[in-house]
Amino acid sequence: MLQETERTGVISGPRQETGAEPAGLAIEELSHSFAARRVVDRVSLAIRRGEVHCLVGPSGCGKTTTLRLVAGLEPVQEGRILIRGRLVAEPGFSVPPERRRVGLMFQDFALFPHLTVADNVAFGLRHLDRAARDRRVGELLERVNMTAYAAVYPHTLSGGEQQRVALARALAPEPDLMLLDEAFSALDTALRTQIREEALGILREAGTATLLVTHDAEEAIRAGDVIHAMQQGRIVQSGAPAELYARPANSFVAGFFGPVNRFRGRVRSGLVATPLGEIRVARLAEGEAVEVIVRPEGIRLARCDGSRGSRARLVARRDLGPVHVIRLQLADGSQVKVRETGAIDVAVGEEVTVALDSRHLFVFPAD
Image (cartoon, rainbow, N blue to C red; front, side):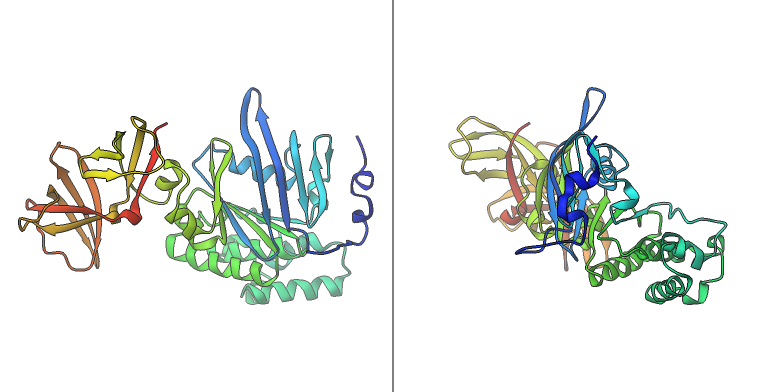
């Protein structure tokens, strides 16, 4: 096996850069299999310094394996991984995890119970003298608002406080890359939002490239500058949260960011017939089988007043402040979910006219 200096050349010494600064993390055509099952399939992405990218998808889609490959916890079988322009892994070559300048945060915090808060943060700073180490620990505890807890042990802290300590410990060696694996999911909803915003704010301020692995679509939308949607080992779409929501690449992405109504049909004379009415489609062949996806917020209701449109009966309604979650029964007996905002003067049992908002309607070739 070649040694690290043989693979990285001059980059193994002081970093030499020309032109644009290299990405904080670059993954190139990464693939990985367990036995005959390919769990990561030609994954590529790049994260600039100070950016937060979210790798999202259902359980078993390959996102945690991707993170483990980047961290150096699994050997690379195919592809390459570079951190700040420095090659850290390719087939037959791997920089050890402790030499990759990568910070890791997990769901369970993984603090050392026998060490104080200050000693937990100082754990990765043994290369510094005592004065420099104490100074760095003090700076980090102040940054995460945990200075007053320096001498206490982790078991005396709340979940949010332990997460702040875990963040300080991960930041202590000044990593070039931070990897977060469902790092906030163990916290209750309100605290999760607060701690996540605090942590990601600190990482952006420090200019640390960050990859957050999550199955929570709402967390990805709130946290990520860029979202990578992963399905069966592949990244099927990458982009800003608003882009994936407004222009999903396939039915999986469209359905990942909240509940949807799905219909099957075929293209006939440029139209697809659904229980909600006919939908005009473009760029799909005559007779092609398609899946129509309508988000709950894409269905508009009105009282029946003789106007044209599909009709339905309101069979359930739940008012959540200004938002109304409604279930309609259509003429063919099927039911759809509706999400209305603002005032609505329709009661359970009443018949309504239904219209569709094209911004929340998508048609894809059927799988």
